[in-house]
Amino acid sequence: MADGINALDLSRSLIKCSSVTPEDGGTQKILVNVLEDLGFTCQTKIFSDENTPDVTNLYARLGISAPNFCFAGHTDVVPVGDEESWTKDPFGASIVDGLLYGRGASDMKTAIACFIEATSRFIETRGPDFGGSISFLITGDEEGPAINGTRKLLEWVASEGEVIDACIVGEPTNPTNLGEMIKIGRRGSLNAHLTVFGIQGHTAYPHLAKNPIHTLIDMLSALINLHLDDGSEHFQASTLQVSTIDVGNSATNVIPAKAKTVFNIRYNDLHNSTTLDKILRDALDAINKNYKLDIYVSGESFLTPPGELSSIISQAIRSVTGKTPELSTTGGTSDARFIKDYCPVAEFGLIGQTMHKSDECVAIKDLESLTEIYVAVLEQFF
Image 1 (cartoon, rainbow, N blue to C red):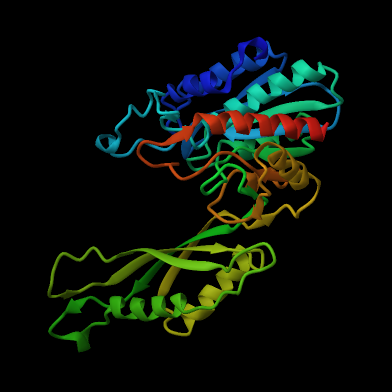
Image 2: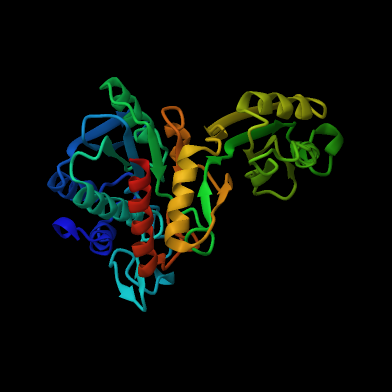
């Protein structure tokens, strides 16, 4: 490859860095060295917040003219978890039977490596005057609170007068085979913390107390049975799932004073957090008003309607794999929820079956194919 850039070798170098959120582990220094050798101007930005750890981010750009095509991703990874359940070193980047193992192999250090090899090959073929710019938007805070990462980096990029015209995020979007799925949007995610208040007392004298657990059960039943919607053109139906119920009562003969629960709603473009807040409070108020409801929104639902960007990626996928990808909005949240405020964005990367699992891995042949797809995307975009 041009300048010796090879996605597999670069993937292994990145995986060997222990970059569990919010630690950088040296990943972005590796990227800066490689990108500067390709002629990119690199800007490392460390953002701070008094309540969350500092995060290292990278914006790199080659070219000064429009359009500016951006590759976005993250170098941070989730914790290893139970190390005894791994059969390979989580940060060893070992290769066994055509598979590359390690934390970040699927999600998503390898996609970043494919971005860079594809860019290198594109530049080698087209030369430096290819009719636009290529940029990289890399954060170390996607798997964490996402406060000092992509959101702030995008704000900084805009403040510098930079304009991004289209963006592909390298999240692992494919369920079982490379080329199956492009993400053109994501559901919103709302986390609700509900506390129901009662009156503490003796279980033998319930008439002198008020059991908040009983009330909570009725309130949860009402929430679970809410019919939020039937889905929309590009989204599945919204869902509500209870994730925990906590009382903290160690005594068998005491009615507690309060009971708590946490639930999550994954919602489509028929709702936003404000409308859902009202729906929830109306349902709860109909049963009991002695409660506290705190709502935290990870991200609103969003959609980049099928258009030029998804068409370019689809054509690139077909040219390499022969598959016609589904345009989907399934799955969890990603940093595309921030990028969509600046430009059209779509997500396409590797297979997600092992992401966040023990023995996370990716097929080396898929790295090669993904690189070919990204090359084809650049060729069609410019």
